[in-house]
Image (tube, rainbow, N blue to C red; front, side, top):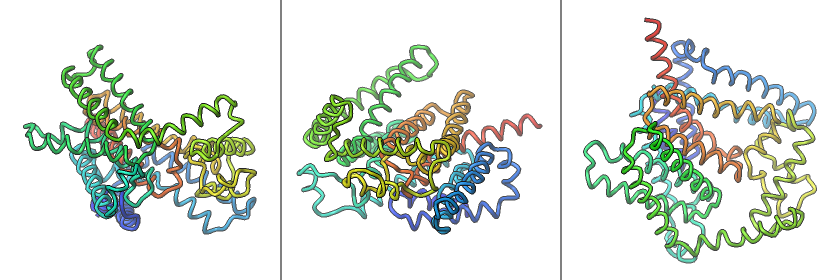
Length: 420
């Protein structure tokens, strides 16, 4: 039941929150039923220890919110429950069982869910929207859509070997090439600059890493494969960017002019009519507000909408529900202590996966896919408060928990061998 719940969870999160919750509850129910078998492993895992510490801190924050800020009990319990999903990292890692094949299947199921989103969100006037240079989002938030497309693009590129198969059949390579082009086009059409910047950083990181690894002979990949792959992606990116040059130029040019003017004025003259201007105003306000309660933050809440509405801030900015930065959102609601507890989970997963790779228990293509996700998700959260949306948890727990599964189970197998 737990694995079935995970499949539903992975399949549904791109397009159906309700169905995603069904999978979530199935996973949790199966986890509780299997707890006697899981507990001996879980109690020794740092993810569980950090979860307990976080739970105690959230209880403290909840009581503080009720007493000092006259918060409502339902709202406080909802905010605490929202943050306790960090435990899903361990649950998903457990149900995947450390199998690389199972992880690939879960990723494939999520990709199928993304295609369901494309099918259900398709509009008859889609092509006319593209011709007029409008943002394409298939009925959901454009930032979320671009994140899906960019993640699918990274997965297709870096897990190409798994898609091609051992025999490198030409029809598989043709479909893979089409998918790479398709996801690249979708990423451009979503017109989300944060995702574009993150993908550029991912490309630079991977290029430098592969170059260093090959030159130092620490990466066992033929240089010709890497060179051909980079040339293919660069040519494809250049051709696609040229095809949609008008949309890209329109989306970037005004913001660059606004940024230049703001830098010249030392950020005293901020053009709030631009999206960058709105974000900078919100970020400046958030930093000033955080300074008043830096360590434990203000009341525990899902978003900063209450603060924004009451602050001395431009009305065009005050109408937003959050400050478009997940890290500032967490600092506002949970303070530095809460942010450090939050960051422990992804940082520990990164550490565990890196150790697993260095011990030769994870293929390099999996490791690079994981790092592309870390960079991509880490950067887009600097410009959008994904933490305040329901998308955050399935994306974060499936991908981080999935790769953590390989590290967790390889560690368990190693311990079993030492005990024998």
